[in-house]
Structure formats: structure tokens, C-alpha cells
Length: 479
Image 1 (cartoon, rainbow, N blue to C red):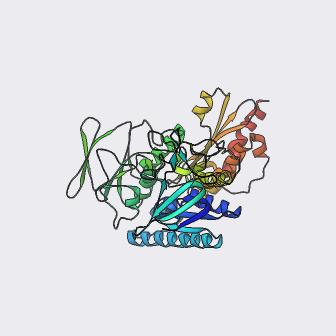
Image 2 (cartoon, helix red, strand yellow):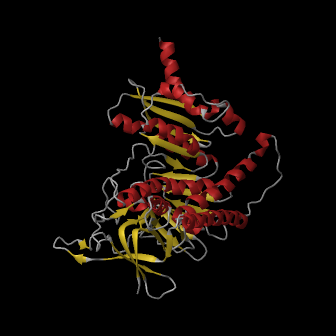
Image 3 (cartoon, rainbow, N blue to C red):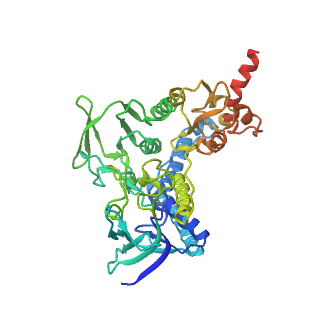
């Protein structure tokens, strides 16, 4: 069994792992990238990209349904689900092939298979010991069988992501009780769907499937959808979902899920029952850390299985770093990519700390939602003298021409200094518009600084300008 030596071994080829491998290769390191499944990880193959492709189909279906308001009468339309899946798959294949070409161009060795860390000799403190200059040995087992590939690495970055979490009372069966992964591959849409979990993923799928003709009910045990988000956003989304026919149940717990031969029975509250064709579980995700030998290699895990790291993304094993969903803090592709870059630099001798001061939250519901910085409740709890400005899209010329007026722009600011503390947007292209707000918070900008920037007209970007200008104009009138 031969052994290959690398400066850096990256385990997991999702956004975090790909970014780590790329940055290390740019630094001149010899890098290998180990992946058990497909390049791109969950985001490209089973998450962000496939879901957004279906979301675009759903958005167009919603436009067709109200096309008469735009001066177009369509007698009838048909949602051809297999065609939508086919388009989604073509997009994924194209992007995956692009990643493959980038890996080759950057001279990164791609090693297919499942990786596990082989423990070194144990020290008196119970941690793994390796010869100087080595983080450890990685054994990669191929699905085709045979002897494992053995890799010795100067440093290791672990980026194996997460998987949908089941409920003890409702394990996934891929037929009646499904995950988002299952739904994105389903040959046909259910007529009736129950979504358990009103967080980001559950709300995204509810907003997509309702315009496609699915009867959707969402259960969330917390008092609002999108727990932890701004209350105005949660209320706005609940109202929007209700308008398109989604039944929203908040503050209630599902007590039983009983798969039957042709449907599934859902019980909740005080004995209420509902029959559906499928149940979609979106109650969270669990880290993919099992069976990797992390603890034996000296890596400390939390009780939930997440990896503990410091500000440099270094684990308790000094030459092993971890990024992405494994950390249990932010579960987005863009934070994983950022973390991968930081981890790679530190694995090669750097001392860069991660900075989460301005992390945007992008929720691709219909309509979209985006937020960055403090929400109003957090700002007040922190003791800031809080000012709030909120402007609906109904006053936006561009939103009116697009017939996309559902939602608002909200700015939370410091009343004395006018510094922008947080921005929440619900409406058209919110996930694109949040970038300007993210920069404003990252740079500590004030309302006046943002207002001094020229914004084109008529554009959606004027929404943030108008919301920031409103308190300044009120102050002017008061004088």
C-alpha cells in the first residue's frame, strides 16, 4: 500500500473544501482534495443550486398565474415537473464540470473515496502524535473496493458538510417521509405536502411548491416562521405564503407521523390530524463527522458532533482545521468558502482570524428575504438607542413596473451616530440587494454616507437609499 505526501489534504469538495484547496494551490502548496461523492458538495448537487433552479420555475409559474395583470392572457399552462428536473440537472452538470476543470488547471489532485484519519501514537495527554511536519495520515476508501489510498499530510482541512436531520418519530424513508435531497430528485410532485420545520429550507420549499400546484401545510413549533429572524420578516413571509395558499401553523408541535400505504397521517396539537401524500422534514442538519476518526486524531467535538475550533479555525489538533457546516455556526456556501480560504492560509503557517461581523443571511423564498447585522430586537437588547426606518416596495417605481411589490426594506440604526446597525429586506432581488448593506455594516457606515451614493433610477437599489434617507428627511423637517 503506497503512501503519497502532500502539504495539505482537504477532506470534502464542497464550497469550503474547494476554496481551501484553491487558496493552498495558489500559495504553491502540493494539495489533494478528497471527496466521497460529487465535486461541489451539497450546495451544488443537492442544495443551493438545484433548489434555486426549481425556485426559478416556481417564480415563473407565479408570474404566469397573474399574467393578466401585466396585459397578457394565458388560457392555460402546465407544470411539467420532469422537464424542470431536467433543467436543474443540466445546470448542476455544467457547474460541476467547471469545477473539475478548475481543479485540473490548479494542479490539485482529486482523490475519490471516503476519508478517515488514522490516529498516531498517543501522548501522555491522550492526544495523537505524529512525526514533525505531519498533521497525520488519511486513509481513503473507494466505493469500488480494494486497498485504501494512504495520504500523509503536513496539514489537514476537514470540510465534510452536513446532512438533513431526521426526527426520531419520523425517520426518512425516501417515499412518504422525505428530505430536501429526496424532493429534488422526486419523479413526481405530491398533491398534498406537510412541511415540518418552518426555518429557511422549509419556507423556501413551501414557497416553491405552492405555485406549482401542491397543497402545502407548514408546521413550526416556535411562535414565528424563521425562528431568530426579524419579526417583521417572519410576519411578512407568513402573510405572503398564506396568500398563495400555504397553510401556516406556528407555535404548535407535531406529535406523530404515521406513514400509510398510500398517504401519511400527521397529528399535532391537541389531537388534530391531517392526511398528506408526503412529509418533508426540515428540522435542521447534522454534521458529517461520524466514522472519520476525528476524536482519535485529537479533534474535540461538541455533544452534537460539531467540531470545536478557535478563531483561526484550528481544532484541538494543531495541524487540523475545520470549516463549513461542521462548525455548527453558519450553514451557507459563502461562509464556508470564506472559512476555507482562512483555514488554508493558517494551515500553511498564517495567523488570520475569521471575522463574522457582517454575515448576510440570504433566504430564497418567493419573495426573497435577506438580512445582515442586528435585527431590531437584538439592537435594543444590546442597549443601543435604536432608530428604525421601514419603506414598503409599493412606493418603488421599479417594483411596481415588475409587479413585485410584496415586502419592504427595513434599516435599524443608532439614533445618535446614525451608524447602520442592521438591514432587513423582503422583496424582489433581496438577496442581491443585501450586498450593499453588508458593506455598509462591515465598514461602519452611516445613513448619510449611504444616501450620498448615487443610485440609478428606476432601480430596486433605490429601496435601500429611500429607507436610509427617510430618517434624515424627518430630521430636516423637524428643524
